[in-house]
Length: 309
View 1 (cartoon, one colour):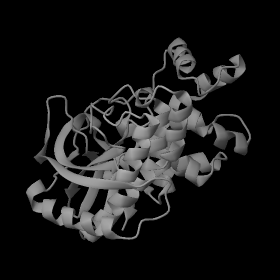
View 2 (cartoon, rainbow, N blue to C red):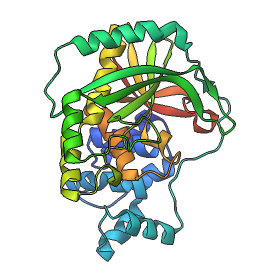
View 3 (cartoon, rainbow, N blue to C red):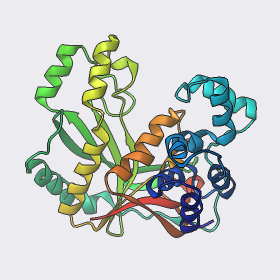
View 4 (cartoon, rainbow, N blue to C red):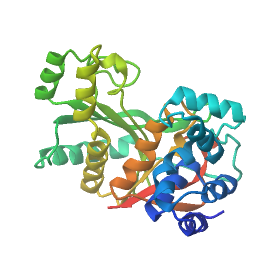
């Protein structure tokens, strides 16, 4: 099924066009799943309201949860229902042949340009935000190369740290700025990306802000969550400024379907980061003629988010 056909199928069954894109970003172009979601019986407003769950879990699972009085946001109970159905909509790991390999340009070719672009971006007047941050750009490998499991390593990282003012505030509140030990210690979030053929390609956006280990007190942790709820928007906006200043023509970003299954991450968080966030920042889905391996050959896909700069 093509991207255009998938959009027509979903919108013809009462889903709004933006909702259809978020569903496709989550499911990929799996015709069986899309037809099942399209056939879900409910009013158009109800379909839109349930679309995230229909895409993440499947209509039969959602229907059973509703009939059983289970909250659709209760991950553990929903996982039990999914298991009882014997259906797990996890990433299809089959290798695609043929597929196009991502050919990132060497870090040395872009490091100085991107650092200068970042300096210009950070010197601009900041927009309204409940927090302030500073960014660091680093190269995580001269070339992006495939490991044995097909994952990509190398490329660039744009890391967002709290400003001095925010760091003092977080410390006063008792937040553990070093909790993000697995990724970028002390950061609010980060993006992994490559430069290829005039495009900035975002493979991953991550943050440990919302893990319980950031603070022991629930009240304070919730306040931190509210303050930094739009960290991803800030990150994407900053990436766009850097890309424009560096003379790049567009940004391409992974979808939920591409990321899902890489780590045991809350599917709701993946949906928010890789289905809702890019769309809210003006990105649209596009389909490549052949599968492209952004995260290695086992993850070659045809549908990605894109924003022309």
